[in-house]
Length: 404
Image 1: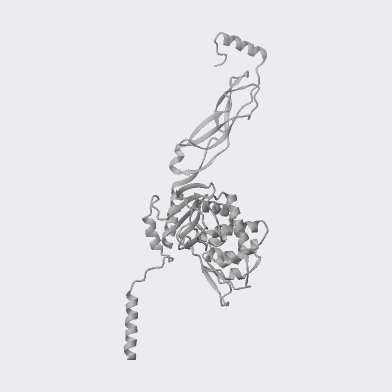
Image 2: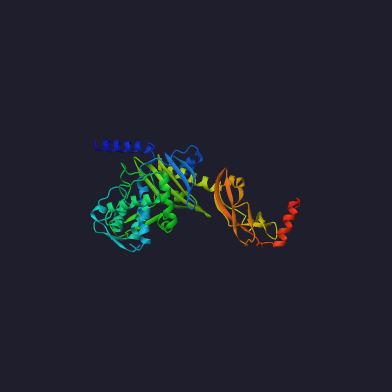
């Protein structure tokens, strides 16, 4: 009987091994990401909302439902980390400040590094836990250290969102565990992300870390943290920044990448799995790097025209442009830029000083003004004497041009 039972168990085990196992939605498969990327189209992304922004200029290069209010899961932590970095910059706290785990931080659910009640870590250690593991308990512990309580920290989050112009954002916690009444938009997320990476570039020390140990190996709660942002493994130039997931939010990713002088932020939300969020974020980044560029105007210190001078020794003076515009735009649009020289007045009256501002060059694309630089007089002009002016008046009365 026992032999028969063992045989049945072995048979069932062998059959189970033959059943194909479906990969978890959290799993990462580089080949699958590449396949999804290859079938992607800028006009048909699967993300429920998405945006691509150049971080330095804040220009939106692509958007899909960018103002739609959505649950944002752990993308919430971007604002949390921004406030922590601001507190460090304001000398309110340091990377080496020791932070003790409170009961509220110890009891936080979801992704964590299993902080024990009363356990102490430096702010630096906890920032790695937030960025690499997306640890909710570490986020609460840091929030309490900065503001005294998570509630006060969340008040600061909402105040900062208002200051930054995030008009469709409201935070109810510092982790993103709350879905109801806790929301943002991909446009607002791009605003806080731009602020974070432009003001506090050392965030990349944490967000680009692929693996990190938490606690000593000898500790019973030792953690070997692996970054959940697989864009870092897949995309050349990727530097961060944050993943997120809840059932309501779907799979979300704020991806940042730098190539040369171009810094891009690509955000996707509501993806069906991890591979899709990596693939479509990478697709957006490639779209940005492939189709956009910085260009500069070339009129600086160049003579651009003349302007009439009344009662001067000569009839006119030359004018020159001063300044350079640095523009970020589609590569195919650089040849379409138009410029118009606009003088403040139709003519000057002598005497005229050299380097007098008398107008501007306005640069436009398809009727939209891109910027302007000033135009100056290139020479000084003295006033003609009385007899010269009288002689010119006589010639003018006879219809004779006094100077060709």
